[in-house]
Amino acid sequence: TKRRLSPSRFMSNSKALVAMLRSAEESGISALVYIPPIRHDAELPYDAVEYQMAIDTVRELAENYGACFQNFEYVVPDQYWGLKESTNVSGDAEFDFMHFRADGHKSLADSVRSALSECGITGAKN
Image (cartoon, rainbow, N blue to C red; front, side):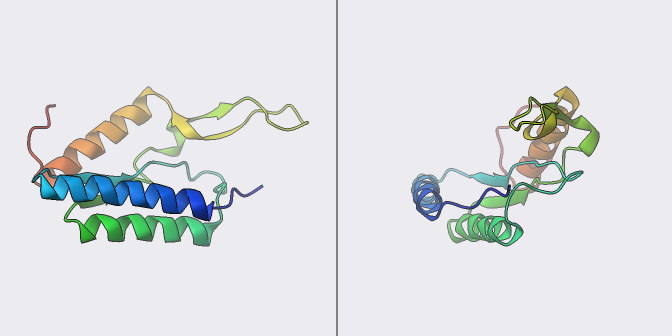
């Protein structure tokens, strides 16, 4: 089944993001806000309209507070994602949308490093 967005949880998380971004801006700290990787070789477990709305909201908040925004949804190739134990009666392994293998972590790290450089955020080590 599709996981629906929880309005109260989304509002709470958005307020927390605003507080962090406001604090960073007031302190002169550069921030990178990003959408994490997700696998795309299977249908997403989220309502597509709600998922895009969440991405757009995060992007807008980042931009409103002078943070750099990056969407890393596609930076981990499909072959680097794994399976998880079954959560249904079939007992069949299921797609894991949250965890990826070591090569996927390297892809994400390379993307973060590149984004930090593009955004002019210094202090990042190789």
